[in-house]
Length: 157
Image (cartoon, rainbow, N blue to C red; front, side):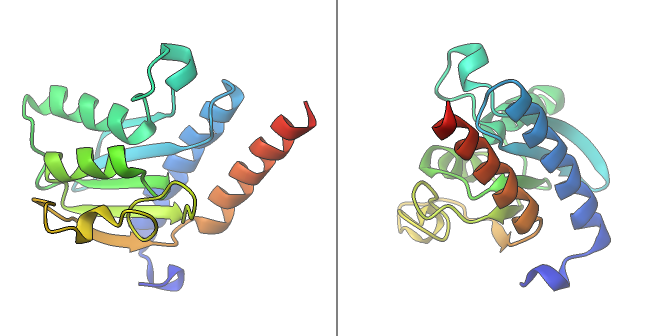
């Protein structure tokens, strides 16, 4: 699916994920944001908090999965969709699979650390128990711009 084919609903949820990425950046975190929804209801939204929480697993995707599972009192989220600004890493792809998330929408691809369409291609592995329907490119320009600005400012300092 190309970015021109995304629905207004998808753009709205990705815009919220981008807001979370901006908040993460303002906290000094890598600007990645995520929103987890069921139908039209937002179950959780957050951005990276690895530095704030001193937790290498506190990626935006993991945080929203944890919050939604707690809210629904379930370890599985089969009727839920995840919107994230950056292609998930292997850890997050594993969490998405174990949570049985229905659909994954992500903005910018990550050639270096991504594990969906780059790197490990986690969902294509025979050991993957569940692969969500995956759609890339939504909000890609804005997500990539946020990431570039963040890392450029780090390099200057």
